[in-house]
Each structure stands twice: as structure tokens, then as C-alpha cells.
Length: 265
Image (tube, rainbow, N blue to C red; front, side, top):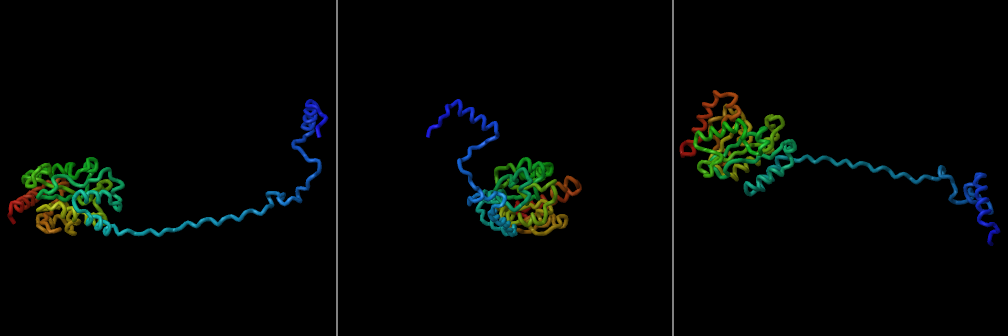
């Protein structure tokens, strides 16, 4: 049915309703909303059951045998490049997280003489090569005195240099027993793959890693054998810088190495 109101009258009526406070349209017949099935107030509706919070699963930490892991990684390396990759990718040594550079080796691979030091210092960590600081410069002069050089291209005069630890310990602290035990398989494999005729162990920790013996001042100057190679323990060049009087004994040890290379005792 059409309304008899024109648009002006309808608008006036609407404005009048708004002025009275009407804010919604209503139907002709009242509605009992309490009788409606869905009309219960929200506050009294039955709340949906709250899901039980997920219990955090406690995963027990699996303790890794780091020495066994090192043994497997080292044994799988078939050459020096493979050993470098295995050692650089070894994730169980915390020193790796604090060092700037990985320090593997320097000099001529396949040289007659291999030098095993202890750990990189600040200069070695910055440069990524072993024995490049003051102790390394003294080592170069010591080796030159018996006709050897790390930059020589012939195996006869060449030297191959590495360390027990490939990452610098914080504040140049000494290597810890656990770190040496972890790196020992890599050092032994390194010697086996480099195949030197003579190994010089520079310092107490190098002797610990290769000979599993400590006490460099007792061990120095006495030939031993490890990984099927003659080894000569010597005092570390850093010790010689602090104790110049010990250079005489170091010179005697170098002459013993030279005699061995020449076919002497």
C-alpha cells in the first residue's frame, strides 16, 4: 500500500522521531526476545571449553662425544684439502665462534720438515696464517739458520707449518686439555697426509697433542716418534723471546734436526 505522505512530510516526520530519541525502526507487533532460543545475554552464555595449554616437550640434551666425532671427520679426509674442509666445518669446538679466521697451515705441503705449534695468536688470527707474529719471525730466522724456509718451492728446503688449534683462544690463553684431545685426531691425520720426514713440535701443547706427554723442558732435544715419523720437541719461539738464554739449547736442537735430514743420527 502506498503511503499518503509526500517526501517533505515523510522527512519532517522522521526528524520529529529523531528529536524524540527514536534510534531504530520497530515492527508493528512487539517481540519477546527472552523467548528466542538465541536471545540469552552474552554474559550468561556457556563459554566454550578452553583448550588445555600445550605442555612444553622437554627434549633431553644428547651429549656428543667430540673426540669420537673428530676421529670420524679426520679419518674421512683423503687429502690435505679434504682435511682442511673437515676441520673448518667441525662444529664442536667453541673456539670457532670467537675467532676471526680459521688458521690451517702455511708453507710447502710435502716438505721434508713439518712444524707443529700450539695455537694462533692475535696476528695469526687476523692474517689467517700460523706463526706470523714476533714468535713466527723468530721461527723463520731459526729455520733459515739450517737452510730451511717456509716460502721455498723445493721439498728439500721447504717447511710445512701448522698448529694444534686452528682457532685463536680468547686473550691468547693456553689451549685446554679438552680442546687438545678434540684436535688430536686432526693433528695426527695432518701429519699422516703431509708425510714429512721430520716433525718439530714447538712447545708444551704440541707435545701434549702429538706425544701425549708434557714437560717441554725435559722433552726438548730428545728424538721421539709419532704417527710413524721422527719428532723433535723444541721450546716455543715465544718462550725464547722471553728467555734469550734458552736460544743456545734451541740451536742445538736445530742442529740435531739438520743432522737427521742429512742422514745422521
